[in-house]
Image (cartoon, rainbow, N blue to C red; front, top):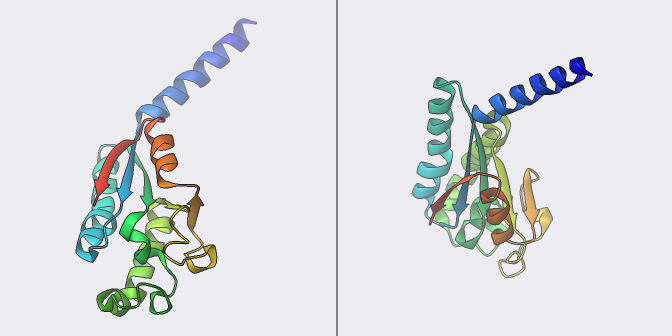
Length: 155
């Protein structure tokens, strides 16, 4: 019995230590401004991850997508309601690679509000496969904040 208790105590201590070494953030992404998207998401997350790694901590990142930010996550903006955003069209291939890199190399989770997808004339097939569709952005933000994620708006 004592061995079992001791084993459970040690396992609990390791879990608590792992939690202490993880910092969590949820970005509330609504901007259509490409420079702000690049600065706060594509570059900012990388800088923040490096900072926490230098302090032997892990940064757990979720980005909740809604508002005007859908444009950055469409597979083919030329054939969408964003077709008049010429800067987006011109930079789309590069942005697509950089966003995919955020998932692959930095373990960033992207959640998209499904409620406004019809208003933006988007279907699941129009969105990158690594983006998870959630019922609405509020649910994603509530769920993350209730599990200890710091909130950062990117408007």
